[in-house]
Amino acid sequence: MGLRGDYSRAGADFRVEQDWGAYAPEEHALYRRLFERQSKLVPRYACPEWIEAIAGLDAAQEIPRFDLISKKLRTRTGWEIVPVPGLIPDEAFFTHLANRRFPVTVWLRKPEEFDYIVEPDVFHDFFGHVPLLFDRTYADHLHEYGKGGLKAMRLDAVKLLARLYWFTIEFGLMNTPQGVRAYGAGLLSSGGELAYCVEDARPRRLPFDLERVMCTEYQIDRYQETYFVIDSFEQLMRETAPDFTPIYARLRSSLVS
Image (cartoon, rainbow, N blue to C red):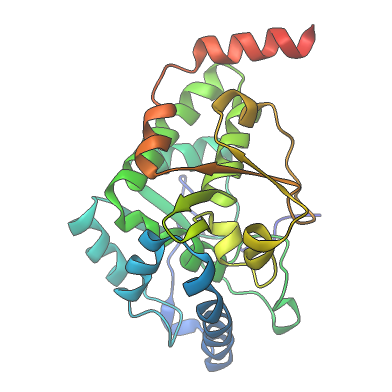
């Protein structure tokens, strides 16, 4: 099955125009419903850094204008939002991150996909990912991840690095004074998994361990069986700072043996 977005007008880096005026009133209303649902959950389940950031975005009433959010981002952390038609190839994705540009899908899910969507849409990308780009340490980590992704492509290690993204940026948990809280975008934008990842007794919640993360398979069609918990974004930055080249070699060797 092909990707859902319209790639016909995408540039070489897969950038498109957001064309904010083309969103229908019904799409803004659906976005508002999604925002309202998650807003009832995040005070209990989201990390404080995300809660603080979303409060300053004024993004509850309509699909946000990427250019206006980018102006705020550039001032805070040097990042900007890049409108894209949907999922994009690894090289384009890593290149954007390495240049402090975060790709955000321009289309919104259909009403019948309110509770679950296969591909990331504008709500997932914006609500889940964009707020933490205002946190300098998190934003710096994502910048380094982009540079590391380009290197992983040269080393044929993207699969290993993708697991790091999945278990942190998409489905990461953090210890806070209030208890374990979510910072991963896939959790923050989910109506069901956000409470599950924090409160349910079934999943394993393991302390962050880089090599174990890279050896752990993730689930793409159901809630995760395992989550990794960091103590802070400073810890995440520190523990992902070493050169991954020998780590990739060591993991390949252990997987083969």
